[in-house]
Length: 238
Ligand code: PRP
Ligand code: URA
Image 1 (spheres, rainbow, N blue to C red):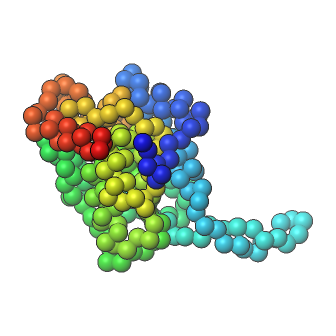
Image 2 (image 1 turned 45 degrees about the vertical axis):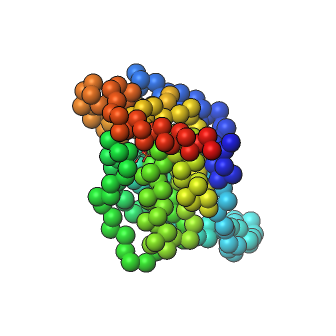
């Protein structure tokens, strides 16, 4: 059962673009364009409940009370795959602050390893939007939320293109207050922790960094990694 914090888009345009993104024949150039377009659409949905405040303006015809977005928003792309989502969000929110967090997933343990964090001492924004195309085990996302909560962020949302049920359960169990906006909730993780059917490696597909058959998602497996995935899948059944 999906937690209430999960918002999976039902928009046909999102479904259409996601199909193109997933296809293995889609080359990095078109892949990057689709990441950008999907982020635009998901960002629009993710910001639907942000507060506005009334402002007086004058149209050419008369004065009126209009609305202005109230909270200061921070975009938190997780390096490196989240980088491709930043420009689209900045088109929607040109005054947003961008705070990068560097995490990579240890391919054996599937645990996140932090390597870049230049957040100042105290939070400078009220709402943080974590940008990462893939929510797989949920480890990278949960670790980022921990960092942002320690920083003092009042409200946090995760914006991802594809999530696995295992990752949604992990993130929502650790942080039930974090809204999770996705284009699709997929079937499961494979024994290497890749989302199935997914789209493969979002970073490699954006940046054209294909290192050969050993790095192909779903090829080859390590006992330790497979056990991590089985444990997550047992948690899901509870
Ligand atoms: C991918 C993805 C997420 C993470 C998701 O990044 O962009 O950050 O894996 O996995 P999780 O939910 O199991 O933590 P990766 O570690 O491959 O780094 P990259 O963006 O530098 O390629
Ligand atoms: N990271 C990716 O890029 N893809 C997955 O399926 C899982 C983690």
